[in-house]
Amino acid sequence: MNETIQAMLSRRSIRKFKSDIPSKELIAQVAESGIYAASGMGKQSTAVVAVTNKELRDCISEMNRKIGGWNEGFDPFYGAPVILLVLAKKEVATHLYDGSLTMGNMMLAAHSLGLGSVWIHRAKEEVESAEGKEILKSLGLNAEEWVGIAHCALGYPDCELPAPPPRKEGRVIWAE
Image (cartoon, rainbow, N blue to C red; front, side, top):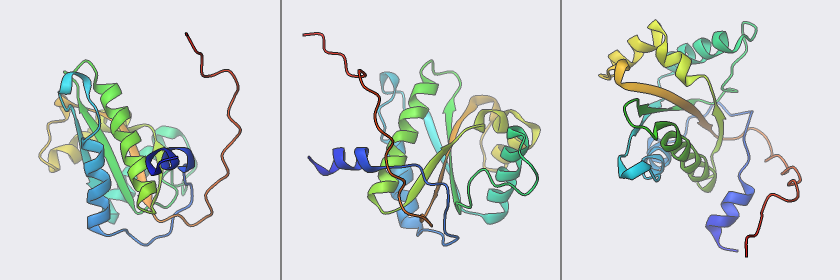
């Protein structure tokens, strides 16, 4: 089995991270792998916001916690020191799919580099909020043009890789 397929089969979501922040070079490799994902009609509708500033990271985490309805003190990013926020252009019909492919590429790239990742939802609600719009504005982005797709929580795992759950039978259907 080649190493790309092996990475696909062995990658797992990580829900416990060390506080050590990966190098900017590693983060950039993961983010760049995301923007190389396939996109509908080659429109490249996605952008990745690499959040390494702890104050901003914690602000986004708190927004996400409130939207998710968790108790105060819970971190929906499981202590990951980096958040890769995936945005997509609202005007592009395939923005949700493009953003999903971006996330998949980044999670596989993270795994291949010895980093852990997990897909975290609620980016759409964050970006639509007044606070989220202000964050995008501070980054030079017009919130009216973008939709939040997801977050890739990123860092060094502080746990063993979880075992893969058994795959459900009958999910590959041959039409020969």
